[in-house]
Image (cartoon, rainbow, N blue to C red; front, side, top):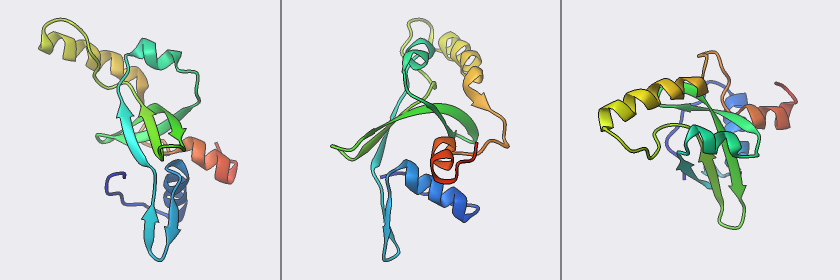
Length: 122
């Protein structure tokens, strides 16, 4: 299950449904549930899967997703906060700076991979 969403247009909706392997029937939408993972930048960069885009906490970000059809789950990986030793405030400030590398402009389209698969657009 994913969180509540609002869509600006049908294309945005269809990209979301495609990303979360959704089925629409009788005004009900069934999707795979999403599990978020927060790897370090090194772990994230080492994931050998295509990058996608997501809207999280008011900003567009790079992410990577793995679809687990057996368990009907979409695993979303993105750099947020990860385990690191040290003073919490110092670690958080350092991670905030590193995380900016994974943020995208506000005119970014969400679910870029689904849009390519459905519409052939970039």
